[in-house]
Image (cartoon, rainbow, N blue to C red):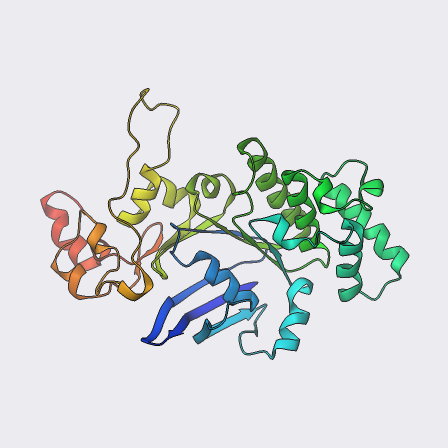
Length: 334
């Protein structure tokens, strides 16, 4: 089966006066039809830049410097800007972190939805308005027919995000990229929005790339999870396997930082020491080694390849089959 999205050896660079900085370094992954792939990592890991590269919205002077991006088997990273604009919305929907950046405050919600629909479909304005109303009903906007004539400022944050979801789905795209869709919302609304995205995309057969820093959201929502660190793939695999048996020390650190109802009152949360390296100061070898309590000489000198594990793939020398075989007789794999 052809993946909805296939990313191969993606490299994104940001030219500077002192040379090019590598924001995404040799990243590969697929998203199957109807699948929700969670992309997780700390701020600066490269999550949003990956989404922007896929949809062709990299901030200048950032550029795709290598690799391929394919949508339903067709290469899209080398398309002219005009063709890429037609692709956005029609085949790829985007849900941004802050709904106010996605909605024009000077135009009614209905006008924005109708314009999007008419851009991608050959139907009458009346039919487009009917579809816009149905979309608002589908995303849970009460009194949808009346709210079409409302302006963005007349909606709450959660309702604005529902409108943005309607915009993203207006042309029935094959892929939806949701970039931190709940960060700007109250905790009580976040679960509703995540559940809504998952349900709507499942009902429509769309694939989802869910970008977030919240491993808890990934655990509740995604089918598979892709963990990024310093623009590189640290681990990828089925969400249940990765959550229960993380194979990379960075993934294990992210999981340990999630609070649990069983934690003792006043107990300190686990944390990963240090911080994400700046683009101009990514260390040699494994980028995570300065923060890793399991690092050894090889981690400092060499960049780890992806090793196959029972859970998926991980870029960690602890999972090198030769090392695992060598330490197993003396007490099991590290």
